[in-house]
Amino acid sequence: MPKVRANNLTINYDQQGTGDPLILIPYLAADCACYAFQLAEYAKHFTCISLDPRGAGETDKPGGVYSTELLADDVAAFMEVIGVQQAHVSGLSLGAAIGMWLAAKYPDRVKSLSLHSPWPKTDAFLKTVVEGWQVMARGSGTVVEMVLRGIFPWCFTPELYAAKPDYIQSLGDFVRSRPAQPLEAFVQQSNAVIAHDVESQLGRIRAPTQITFGGRDLLTSSRFADRLRTAIRGSEVVIFEECAHAAMYERVDEFNQRTLAFLRQHAA
Image (cartoon, rainbow, N blue to C red; front, side):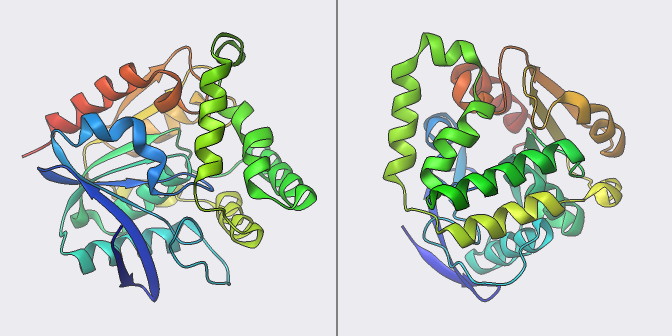
């Protein structure tokens, strides 16, 4: 995979497909491979560029305070270096938080915005959950096992665990196969989640925006839907009724169909 220098980082990324550029931003503790189940369909219509964010994958993991705004600055600088002046932007969870900052702070960079399981400002419930993940990661000493035991149960419904244990196992094996995130890098990334607050900037977003939630997500649930829809002018909200936090894995075909329809609507 290629690497470039941007915003004083060496950033690793993957590029597939042809068409309008589509920047895919990973979620907490994930690298660019996390969109594996979307790429086959998306790349038929778009040049899909998925990057490892600061602190994850094969991108640099410097010390200091991470914020969702800083992570968006990284993406803007990355786009400049690779020669992409404007792109469709899509992100899940932390990736959505980064995408909102990118679209608000660099509106000319974003052609359309896809926000999956987003939230405008971390509330007490979300803060408590993420702090629990930090405790688990420090206690186990390994981010991977914390993801599998701590984060996975928030991402999938109990019914998926019961009906498709082999699928859950395969997702776990996939996580284990990726470059291990150092504990301190996870803490820095998750601190950015805890401190996230883009609410006052949402009115600056001009790009057509799709906002999706899992109907059974407790983490970044549809409790945030009205605030986001009201603040981001002209945005649309989609609910994947029988999904938790990660509809992109729980209802792959439906997720791909509905998100790709939005993206193609706003493509050249």
